[in-house]
Image (cartoon, rainbow, N blue to C red; front, side, top):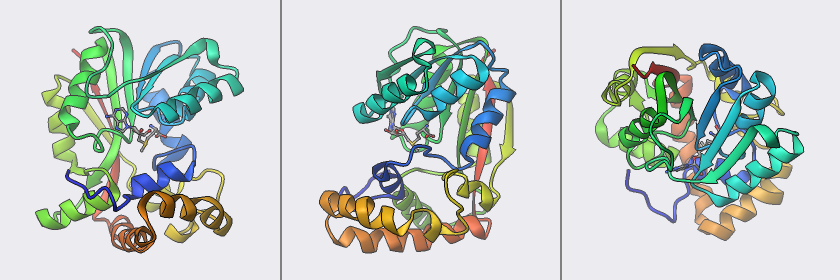
Length: 264
Ligand SMILES: C[S@@+](CC[C@H](N)C(=O)[O-])C[C@H]1O[C@@H](n2cnc3c(N)ncnc32)[C@H](O)[C@@H]1O
């Protein structure tokens, strides 16, 4: 995906807003992952762990031992601070690392999870290959990602991907990439219902895109940060992007899937 660095993506705005959970489905999809992989007591790699809210959740609710990696040093600092705050330091470890070149030996983890950060890399197949490589035989690789439910022309798809900051694929394409990574027994669950998108803010009632942030959050932090980083015109660009992308989730063009594969 080529992008214009002066135009923030929706992903950029979510990250600079400082909200802690950065994926549709909120804690519900995270809990579901813990259940479908029988995570209790396992050694887990959380690839692109963001602000560390998920490793803390897995450690507390499933007694898992988690290594979280993220490309952003700022995200890793947040993750370490959160683990301390939540009293799960002894179960967690964090590292700055690129999901396209994971700094671990083959077969190091019982399972590898990536919540909403495969499609945003320049090479999703390589990311899945790396996750499969570091997983032990018999272990699972789990992802959840934006997924095309209806066909659209290639230029329109590319425009939406640029605005979102991640590239959606069809379910068949996601499964194809997991199979190419050597994973078998592929399983998928549909999380496309629009109310799942709202769960990205478990702390707020979100009925539509305008409810995602409060007026106070917009005025006190998001708009100043956007203008500082991308300039005043970025605000119009983001409103235009929300206006183009959000309806696609409501009209069933764009969805969201949880996928699991097993390393033979
Ligand atoms: C949508 S957020 C998801 C964060 C977290 N998994 C969550 O669901 O809250 C995407 C995350 O991927 C990270 N990221 C982007 N490219 C990456 C890469 N190549 N390797 C590792 N992390 C990456 C970003 O820094 C960001 O924290």
